[in-house]
Amino acid sequence: MAQSMLEGLPLEQSREPTSSLFHNREGERALRPSLQLVQRSWKSAELGLIQEPSQFEPALIRSGIRVNHWARHMFHHSEFAISPEGEVASFERVSVWNLGFVLSARIDQILDRAWDKFSFEFSPGDASPILRQNYEDQPEGESFIVATQPLLLPNGKYVLPRISRFQGDLWLCGTLLDRNQEFPSDTQFIFRRRN
Image (cartoon, rainbow, N blue to C red; front, side, top):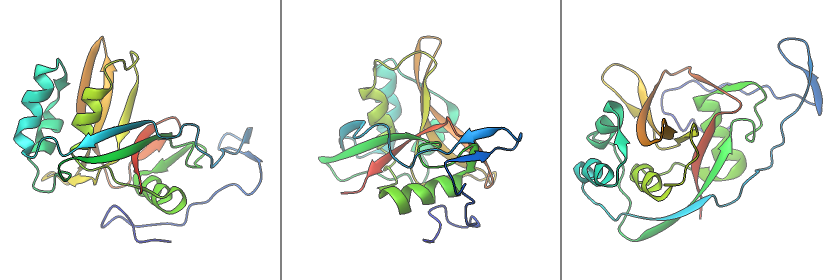
């Protein structure tokens, strides 16, 4: 298995069901998830349009987008990655289920599966505000995580960007997670498609 994409997290071999039907934790029969993607090339975006991280929040606010405390913290993190100017990238939107995990998976398992089996890679940090601005017609209640390099915070937690629509407002949020955080199978992530 490839080295963990989330540095410092222990990797364990994931235990996948070996047949199309298996028994879940409650002893019920369940279908095995498909390792095929439901959606191809969800969105493309031109990156690197803003080269100074401190300019993202004002640009989002001018567009009517709300930004939470942890998203602001991401913009000022020393490892927040900015793309070269004019770079065009394609992004895929997949659920934990689409990646082959039946009930849930830890963040390191999700990132490693996306990397190893699907040739996805991290989205650069500036992808999250750009994708947020470009997805104005997001349905109410929809939320997904942009799979960027997780940023380590002083409190020992990691933060990843989340794009949401809640009570009519468009949001770019920072989502806090622990090293062993598990995400249910319906959690959706955005990955950059490797060229």
